[in-house]
Image (cartoon, rainbow, N blue to C red; front, side, top):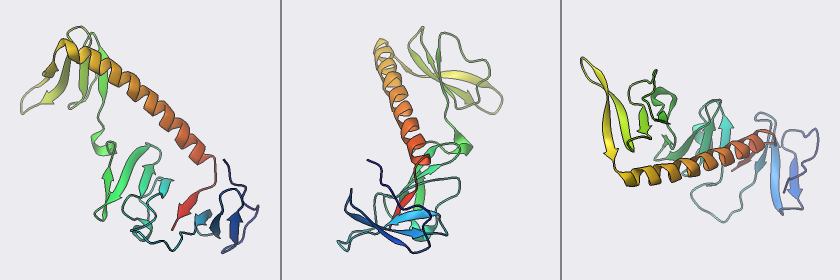
Length: 175
């Protein structure tokens, strides 16, 4: 259900949605409608999701707040006064290849699922060499990884559609 906010709002303008029975106010600094939390208590909003390039302001970050970092779409949760990566950060991206031959241009720490041998391998770099090292091997791995890859691809597709919907709708920040 989409909320039809008033057009051309002014700073501090209040709005009560008849669809959701919730109150909002407009913050012109953020260019966003802000959800006004009820006085029911709790540790914070717990449902705030920031979709932006920069780290959210600490004053707006509560336990359970989510941040989707643009343009990478890495997901973080605010916990113990810090942003904790739920997906890999840009300094240590994890890449997983799948195929019957090792990838030609993989970076160290990349994973490769060998579809011929049902081996999961990591590209390991030590002091004087780099090699693929088997970290898991069994026929059962083939079934599990195949099902996991299918499920993961479905989840990524679903998340991509959700993020696109979020980007195309007005931001709502819960306080």
